[in-house]
Length: 412
Image (cartoon, rainbow, N blue to C red; front, top):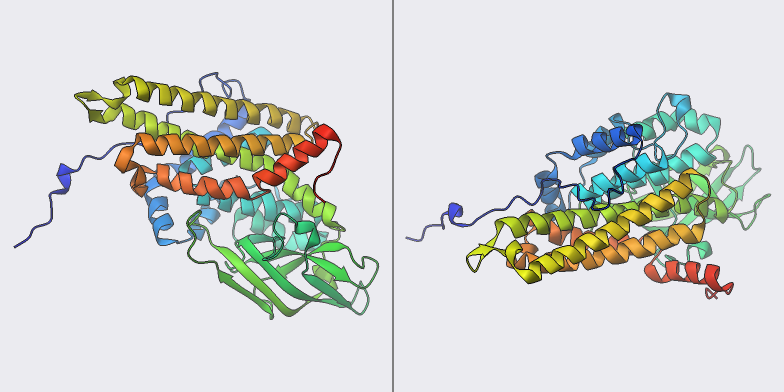
């Protein structure tokens, strides 16, 4: 008779305890109110590592955690929500929250960024008073999940060329719009909430312009399915959406969103968030590698006592420090109202590249144990691939920076 091996024979390693590696003290003197929000995010994420690993493996989206985060008020990423009695997170606080939640899990960090940075920001910036009265408090608290639908199956980086169309029927005050088209990679897009849909208008004063529509997901003609077989960000559901003669009243238009530039305003605000998220992913990988190096023994001593391992740890910490310096500086510029689009692109470009390199080295350092989801590096390594792509690929970010440097646009 065959018996299962004794699980106690297989050593386990604590790679989840936060080490707060900050070699230059980059975050040592951030304002206390921002540290308080960081601590709130830390408390929220405490104990979630094992659960998120299970959700990631099973491709489950824990929407209850989005609502829990909403109760803590950590969605208000630079969004003025004083009208509903909530405190607005400063750019630094929002970055630290993003970093901390991404350190726990990339899907969790992305879910919070979609709800706050994209959906809540869109409603707060461009919504009518009636729309805000109906939805702002519920979106801010996570009671209603929000989606930001811009990217299309055939238009990712070239999102300005979107094809989803909204045809005006009647006049712009009392008429309606009929929406046809498709969107892809939309977080929360199949989760039963509301979708802020960007479409090109046909008819009326804004003929040919891109506007945003508030679309409840139960609206007839709204069809969404969860994208399957993802190898990254598996614990958040992203949707392929089809709009099939979906009709909404004229009151569904967000009056403040009048062109594609308004969509770009939202994306600009969240690009810096991706740079912060990359810091969280990288920190998780470095923490895991360092903890493992101290505990794992090979050749009669901890692997951290070997020269090559110490060199790799030094490389990872130096790269992590560079990433921390980038987000600290650009966030200060953001808070002062001085951050340019190319500077935000540089932070995203730099940090997601560095995060990929750190994850690769950390995975190798853990040897065979590095591919186990329970040791978290492989999960972060996969999720970094998504962060490296969304909110503008590396190639697009480099063209934004290159145009700023040379004065020549290489987009067309």
